[in-house]
Length: 332
Image (cartoon, rainbow, N blue to C red):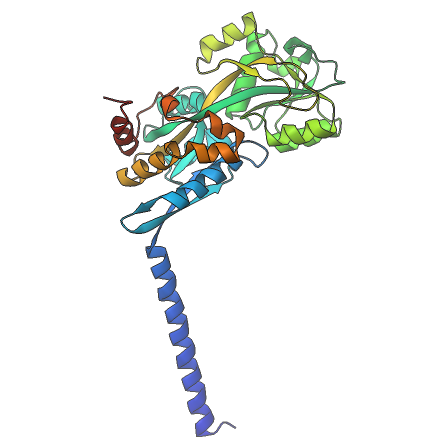
């Protein structure tokens, strides 16, 4: 049986606990009030979007303060371009990496976005070229794209940019998607594991090179990167104008002794029209005035520059980013 003293002590303890919890609540609110949160949707961990996005988020967090509030940026894994464009259009995140061709299709309502144009998308700036890498097992008996007939190849999720590109490549080379190949829908990392195990012949990977998952594969298994060049690619470029001729330099991967002719598409940093102008201005400024920092920590950082900030950008530029480009003389 409790004495009056014990009851009183319990009441005091409960009061102290309540005050403590209230203090914690208000301190947490104060902490949130001192920060502006900013997300960057990237891709899977086996590609380039995610590691570069993480470094960009850290750079922004270190550099940007708006009205006395620190901007706290985070990179989030995602399903790459098509999913990122859709997420942005819903206002589900503040910014995202999207391939130039996908961003164009999303805004105009073509290809994967037919009948559902995402007119609220805006560009922040161009990043780096994503190299198309057709990776095959060295012993798969595949030397050219046409040799893929009767083979298994991964294209990523149905409806993705990667999936669309494989379909366009097959058409350009005169191959039938349903009849001539066995198609797999694995992610970059998953497809690499299947190649390792001998359960997949090839994987189409569009990412900044060197790509983490391909590096890991090449370090332990014999692979080849097929060239993508010639008349068939010229036909492809008529329907996919954002894909430019590119070179994958020799020794990008173990065992790759010579340059490989291929194609590439530029990655774009995008947002939506609800992002406030001041935040857009400051994050763009933080990126293009600190590219030397990115270059020191990621090889693709060397290919990001203010001079190419508007390359392959076909949708409206966010007003905050536009202000920065006008200050730098890129726009009049």
